[in-house]
Length: 318
Ligand code: BDR
Ligand code: CA
Image (tube, rainbow, N blue to C red):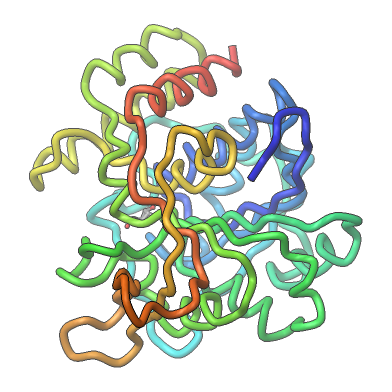
């Protein structure tokens, strides 16, 4: 995990997405305050909406966050072996519906996501963390194309799966269900994995009063974030949630503030073929016959501290 004062190189890979955008905002805020994460590159993947839309959203989010100098590349349009199943019901047709965002003030890299990730790994003297908040297609494609660079990946901190349940089906969470073969490659890779699944992310709720705290910051970024949260809150309220689940931000927060999370090591397999459980993350939670762990699974958190850190991160953009 991150130690205070340490600067840890990261690649942000996602499909923005309201909660992806907020995860990126937290990562960037850490660079502005105590230089915790050093964002070397951002890569977009098809997921919540099509790749064209997630890449455009990524450009708008990086512009909003003042990250126009960070290289951004487009990755996979669709999963390794399947058609893309997207989620416009959650994030709107644009993938980032709600407040008006600035138009992009950066261009896409001429490299593909895999080429850009490989370049960052090759050029880094220390291990690089990949924060993946969408389907794992880009990350798996990197592992397939460049097995020689595996050693340069310090860990993969991902939002995906759930030990106890799913959201897209009773057994499967969206990011894993979209590309289970990619997830299977990642979980079998031997690279250290920090998995923030629904077990924790559905407890990382932003409630109405929390939205008000962010609204009260009264800054350009703060105004966009509270409107994103309001959009996400309204959607989730309709389907029975008490607040807006901050799925993707957990993958960043668990690196920055490990002390507020509960983590257990488990062996996790991905169900790629089942009739009812396709896309499930099957964790070996047994006490006996337990298999060797391949993932640190985040299970719980101190919600109030999480929200305090979120508010602090938004306020850093004053
Ligand atoms: C995941 O699905 C997406 O809609 C969110 O951005 C998050 O990554 C939650 O299941
Ligand atoms: Ca996402």
